[in-house]
Image (cartoon, rainbow, N blue to C red):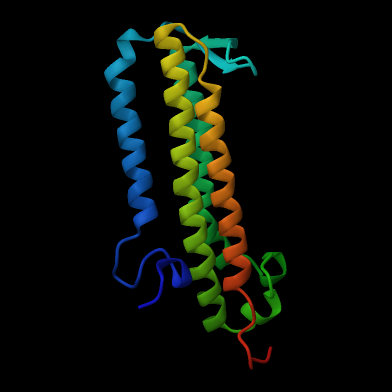
Amino acid sequence: MEHCWSMGARRQGGTNWPVLLTLGIAVGLGLRIWSVWSQLPDTMGSHFGISGRADSFMSKEGFFVLMVLIGGGSIATVFAARIWIRRLPPSLVNLPNRDYWLATDERRETAIGRIGSLLDWTGMATAALLALAIELAMRANLHQTNFDNATFMVVFVAYFVFIFAIFFRKIRLLRVPEGSES
């Protein structure tokens, strides 16, 4: 049995865990927002400086619409990349060993599955990071305190370690197999 990152986030007919986890994060965040909506100030701190103090403000409706548009759009773009890779001409696809992986339909599908899986996990990690940032912003606004930069930075560093691990995994997964010819 192959590792879920090697051939795709899901096996044929199986569960796409990153998408399900991302949906769970979105539902959980939505429920959290719903539970505190009436307690949030009408004008929320929407940007926080290095000290954690709010230095930009907007309506709470505007804040959450912006978060949905930017955050949701970013995550949707990551998940949609698999579709774009499939439809783009090979000259526009930037992959390690592109000439090998895009030389045949079978190799192209293998490459898309491998990259798609890594992108799915990237989308899930990005959703988790954004959910944490929104939660910390809500807490700062609910309690009229500073944004918790220390917690955010720990998770932000962990996020980038994860992203770099995915990047290096991508390079490894897209090596030309030994003994193969283009």
